[in-house]
Amino acid sequence: MLLTAYTRFCSRQSTVPLAFARRKSPSVQLPSIRHFQTTKTMGEAKTVRWGMLATGGIVRTMTRDLLIDPTTRGVTDIKHVITAAASSSSKKSAESFVADCVAPTQGASPVCKAYGSYEELVKDPDVDIIYIGTPHSHHYQNCMLALTNGKPVLCEKAITVNAAQAKALVEEARKRKLFFMEAAWTRYFPLSIAVRQKIQAGEIGEVLRVTADLSTGEAPEIYDADHRNVNKDLAGGALLDLGVYALLWVFQTAYHTLPKDKRKPPRVVGAAMTPEPRTGADESTTMLLEFPVSTPSGTRQTHAIATTAMRVHFDPGRESEAASPTVRVQGDKGEIQVFGPIYRPTRFRLLPYPASEERPIQTFTFDFPGGTHGMSWEGDEAARCWLAGKLESETTPWEEMVVMMETVDEVRRQTGLTFPENIETTKFPLDLHKRDPNKKQAYINRN
Ligand SMILES: NC(=O)C1=CN([C@@H]2O[C@H](COP(=O)(O)OP(=O)(O)OC[C@H]3O[C@@H](n4cnc5c(N)ncnc54)[C@H](OP(=O)(O)O)[C@@H]3O)[C@@H](O)[C@H]2O)C=CC1
Ligand SMILES: O=C1OC[C@@H](O)[C@H](O)[C@H]1O
Image 1 (cartoon, helix red, strand yellow):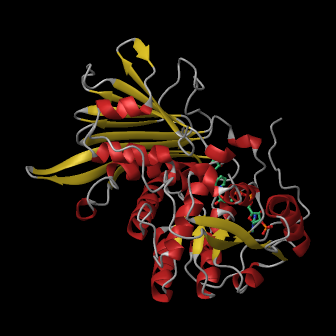
Image 2 (cartoon, rainbow, N blue to C red):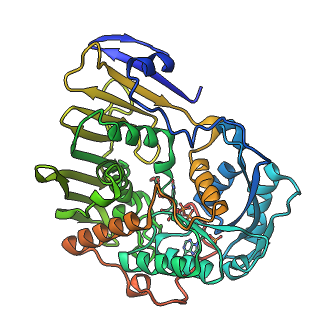
Image 3 (cartoon, protein in one colour):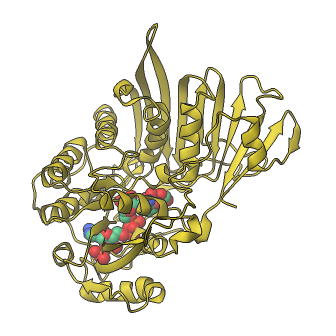
């Protein structure tokens, strides 16, 4: 079963099937119809042909997730195939990627072509949409390359290094009428959809405060200094790699749940940063935000604290009895607590103020059907939007993506976090730093 609900009241813990939980709270819509659709489609499933730009870790995961049978997650209107992959290192590396990651599941039909350059990929007429999985530093150049060659794009987070680049990409996509989306995969999880729906249904009242943390508990020294996680030439550091998830949760709960005309950019009240000793990338960043919210009686503030760090851990209790929530959304009528790493959480708890027999404490757990890592859902969204002729996804609107990057810019301004000019610029095209193909990719040094 995709979703199970457990209803708890006081210390008594009873497991209640979802249908019952629904009956007890009839106003709650669970979960998104769109992502849980098991309804029959009117015709054949439509096939979307993906081109994979890069062959590193996340592209491998995304490839596996796209090729999982969509019906395992109740999706019957679309299918994904990979028709080309490109490596900037060599054609051989693209060929090995196809042999290892595409061919075993997809077989020989359709053929997946292997290219030794991104330029060849974006010109391939057999590709409908490009997925970009390069380091943050390269997103701007890679997205521009795809868009200016007429290809729609789904690009990994952080979408760019700064807001100016994000805006320039949005303008390019708008001008060319091309779909463009940040791969904010967590927003498309049934769990995230259920959390947003509960907030919108008023289950915790007005959102007054949000805290969100992604801290890995892995000291930066475990990475070689040129690893993308700490290398400033690749826009490495906690803020752009991990902190964007803390911001994603703050935005999807405190900002996105408001009607469009009520969404106002936050003020960055304060930000603190600790530099990584070797490279000066941030190993820890703390952000304090204030969102103005208009109410019938005037403007009030929603406060948010978004944190990220390498040396401390988001859940030292590691999902045991001592588990700590990694996101807390606090309203005047209740609170939502999310557990697990915030990029891939597995459960949340709804705690009404006060809990009662009518409004019990409830825990909702989610699984990953068909063995998906969780990226299939964002793939489905991008495919559906593209097929429908949409330019952007309503769940990650361009406007919100830009406001998030403006927030990052202001945090960087306050903390003095800088990156090299060639990865901050909006000039295009530029030749950026290339990966050394002779260097082993697993740069982690755990000794
Ligand atoms: N959604 C999620 O859960 C995750 C998202 N990510 C995001 O995905 C992106 C890539 O991360 P990840 O896959 O872990 O990184 P990897 O280092 O594993 O892969 C990056 C790939 O980008 C290409 N590349 C092009 N230029 C360079 C360069 N100068 N240095 C290094 N690589 C280069 C390479 O592919 P090639 O040689 O074939 O061109 C390389 O294999 C980042 O934006 C990251 O934030 C990462 C992990 C999880
Ligand atoms: O997106 C991500 O999620 C998980 C992290 O471990 C990883 O570094 C990051 O890029």
